[in-house]
Amino acid sequence: MQLGVLGLGRMGRIVADRSMAAGHDVVAFDVAEEAVADAADAGAEPADSISDLADRLDGDKRIWLMVPAGEPVDAALAELEAHLGSRDVVIDGGNSRFQDSVRRAESCPAAYLDCGTSGGPASAEEGFSLMVGGPEWAYEAMVPVFDAVATGPAGHDRMGAAGSGHYVKMVHNGVEYALMQAYGEGFELLADGRYDLDLEAVARTWNNGAVIRSWLLELCEEAFREEGTNLGTVADRVEGGSTGTWTVQEALEQEVPLPLIYTALAERFGSRSEGRFSRRLANRLRYGFGRHEVARND
Ligand SMILES: NC(=O)C1=CN([C@@H]2O[C@H](COP(=O)(O)OP(=O)(O)OC[C@H]3O[C@@H](n4cnc5c(N)ncnc54)[C@H](O)[C@@H]3O)[C@@H](O)[C@H]2O)C=CC1
Ligand SMILES: O=C(CO)[C@H](O)[C@H](O)COP(=O)(O)O
Picture 1 (cartoon, rainbow, N blue to C red):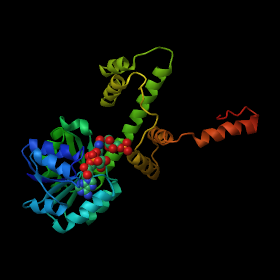
Picture 2: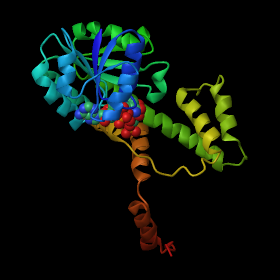
Picture 3: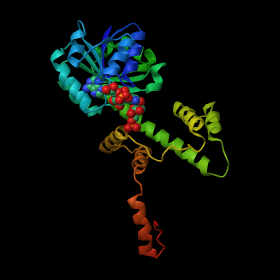
């Protein structure tokens, strides 16, 4: 199959490389010229604009977007629109908000597949897990490419109607936040608790047969190995948070309780504040009601 890949960063390049390795022909474009040149060195046909990419695709067009979520997706679709018809298929493999994907599916002249992608850059060798939403015929048409980009046929499936792929990926990310929080709390108690422990050894032991073994726990083991058991100079600050925020917003709308995921998100936001106002106020209020001594910064 001939596939246009738009966006050749950490993830899009893997889509292109795995597709080519499976025998598909890739036409590649990125706003960064070096990324296009690198993909061309790897065997892709380079395009010098989004319109050029569309023009280079013969017959029914199959295009995979792997650009940052939000405005870049709308900008790419606006430029593609004039080149698309109802037999064409556009896949958005990024972390788009599911409501945006529903809107885009309604307005895109082509069949639109929203594809949640999990595994990250580490999946270059093994392939991704793909959660796809949108029309069944379009999903079926793209199965040869999904087989190549995912871990194989079991690594992708159609979740349901438009938006469902990104909805499932949103919830996946919420679960990711809670798992990271749980591992973090467990290792914090081990680090500050009553035994002098080698946390890499703990993680390695857990990863070999324990109930809580997982890829995230393997990444904990790697972090302790590379940074040291006290995590060295790694800062007490966690960035990101958009997909977790959407998960919590959706849970509130659906009245589904997600205390663990909310707590993990709140911890992430709290990590970005130098001195938490709520803690400072609690400190001062204890003086107000109990004349307890106020701890003060020098
Ligand atoms: N990095 C990760 O672990 C994961 C990322 N994602 C999602 O995949 C998408 C891509 O992520 P990454 O590859 O990590 O980002 P990245 O920043 O490495 O790559 C994005 C690429 O898109 C290009 N780009 C931006 N606007 C463009 C446009 N209008 N036309 C053509 N190219 C354009 C950039 O030049 C860049 O090369 C995002 O939505 C991200 O949230 C999803 C799962 C995991
Ligand atoms: O989707 C992912 C993992 O599954 C990506 O790594 C994503 O960039 C994580 O972003 P955030 O930390 O803001 O949720």
